[in-house]
Image 1 (cartoon, one colour):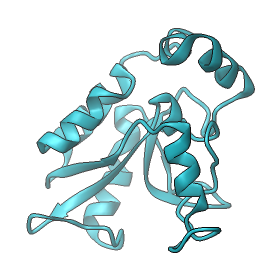
Image 2 (image 1 turned 90 degrees about the vertical axis):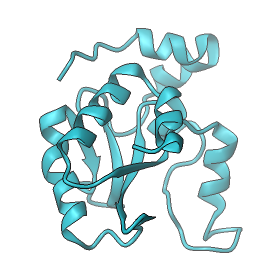
Image 3 (image 1 turned 180 degrees about the horizontal axis):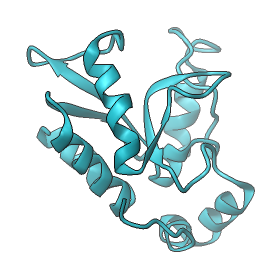
Image 4 (image 1 turned 90 degrees about the horizontal axis):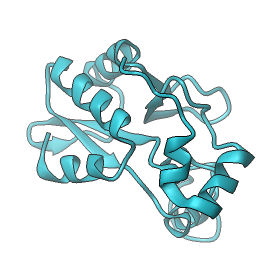
Length: 154
């Protein structure tokens, strides 16, 4: 992985970072981490895209309703000829989705209402944050949320 990807992994839950590293070593191409931890404000800005701001809709989650806000999700993409492939339509994307479960990763591509192909998160956590997680975050930050989880090494 490149330096930007490694930097993004530094900000997410350590077990998620370990699993993404594991996945990266299993792939036949270089993996990019395009998104990791996001603030509520960053999430709200993404939510506004395609609604009140120009662009296409890229998320259904407002701030506090994405696992990115809790360092429990990353978005990934393959590199093709030194460039990030945003298309999501070739065999590299299929390889990511095929190998992610063996690393203990669930993927947003399976979501029915708003499939999110590049989105990976630990299998043990829900696909969206709970009220309890938001409350823990408001009182104790990321550390409190992370300490409340049981993530085993996959």
